[in-house]
Image 1 (cartoon, one colour):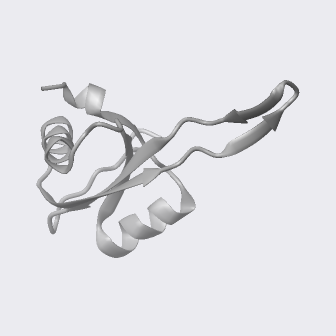
Image 2 (cartoon, rainbow, N blue to C red):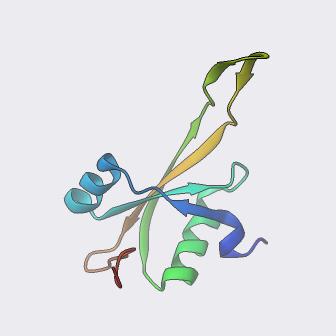
Length: 96
């Protein structure tokens, strides 16, 4: 089993992620491509000390980009929408 720091790559702080957080108490993370929903649930619960209700995952394909040397491709990646239990929050900007 991987540690929580290996499964959770980074939180996604975007406009859509902020709206989802405010409306339905969800947090969005970039996660490892081979992580499943149960591993993501355990990683969030152990790292942030919160209770998770649901986890939705999305596999995103990397964009094709034209470079000076031809055509390149960005890496594929995985995004997880984590629904927290009522009254639970994760604040990424506590000290800011």
